[in-house]
Length: 349
Image (cartoon, rainbow, N blue to C red):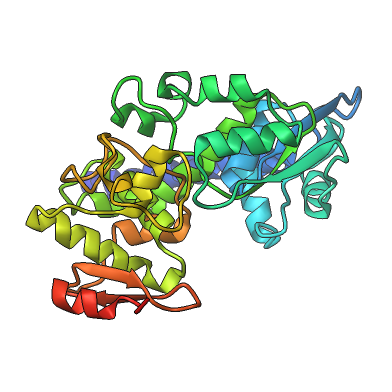
């Protein structure tokens, strides 16, 4: 009889425990639902405060959530992201300058960002692919966007930006930002400082680097400086995107064989002008950047490579070409694997 009583008692205790656990779970769920619902509401609807902020171009939902949270406009970053996902609004959020307030709930904020209420106090600028820093400084100065001397000073040494852009720490001390300011079209606030323009270009480079370059570099015995230097040469030598991976193969093959790269673009960088035809004297100019007299890659990039050249630098075509020469009116080249064919491919004068 005692055994039966014990079993009944144990059964009752188990039921009590299950009820208690169920009660606790119910409370947790209720609190979670309550917290979720509260997170959807305005941070301060009683005394709304206006806040002006900027959503940079190409910002992810995570980045936007961080900006809103840091400015005290939302209660929870994760819940903001969940709402955006549930509303399929991720691709609708637009970059720009916004004036929001703490009296807006999450749905209102998402609605405002989807409308793209960008401020009229912005201006766009474009950096063409293949530009050198000195060309950027000249262009931006003429457009009234920067002080030329300050821009050149800030871009002359990576130390000014390496604490925020950690990839710069992989470069040599004192190295400039040549090659690392991504060429594209940007939107900035009027009266933005030189640092802000440079930050935008470095951030855009970093996105391409993290996604397209860094994973590939792990498979190659080459440094960041070397791969961007190679990409800059491809940028300056190439005329059409479809040939960039072939050019990359030519330079990779020459490096492996210990051949001179003999890139006209590197000599043009030394000369400070883009001569259509180099003289024999030009190709003998004394500079570590002259790949006609020095083996290997030059000390650093010679221009800012675009996305196609950056990707090509770590994705050389699987070919044995060692030479190329401009032969097409459309900017195309003829590629060969021996010097005799290379000479025969040259356009007859």
